[in-house]
Image 1 (cartoon, helix red, strand yellow):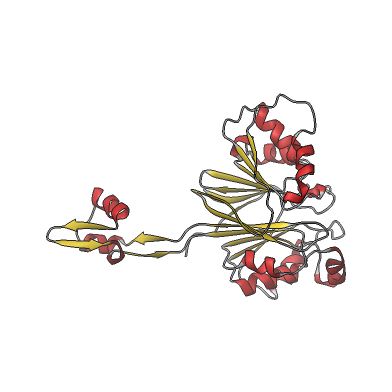
Image 2: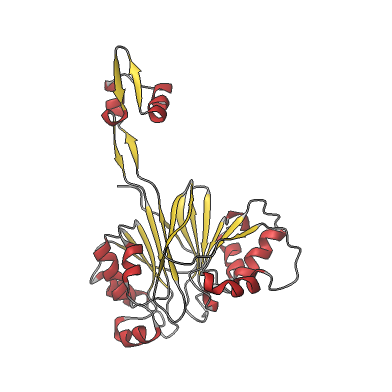
Length: 303
């Protein structure tokens, strides 16, 4: 299963229809919770997602709409007796804020939270899921965006396997060893397979246009990106360190993104989903999702 569960889509303050931020990326056996704002625990209940689904907390920065849900998530994980560790990634400059969130109130603390603060752009974690990278962005405080990259692999071609007489355990041996003996000849893995590009996911919040935005979005199968403002208010976006829907879509177009998920909307725009879609579609021809609370967006299938 690879999908994005959208838990909240509002910037700065929640509205009657939009909760604070919260995005759970379900990536095979890994669950990465990005920027849980206030009320995320309840949104997870409404979405049918248990606390045990979270393996990693990934905070871009410490403005409240991106982190005030941390206490509820950690305390719920303890209440539910989550046995696996939860790794927390966040800007190192905000370590004191994470400490406050981690122990915001009295509770029976049983969960194993492993803090891995981010000092600078680079690799944040490596695991079975691939490589989690961080890139510095430009806002009024330290902000890091995230990028999940699955290693490239190979896909076996059934017709070629049959042609060489390889089946059953022979396929597994070929995958492990890189070659297999069939009769009087050796078959190399490259003869019966083709390169398979690893999938890529990018998460960009609270930033002006900068190099980091493009580095994160490059070749992403799914880009989740803030679109706080519409183009008519681009001057405000620049002033406050945010993006417009048009800017976000332009990034997606230039970086070869397949699915663009716009979110983090200003409360100034009421019932503006159509305007966001239209503005983004003027510059981006791929799939556009104007996020709504509690929707699920599948990561696009491999090409």
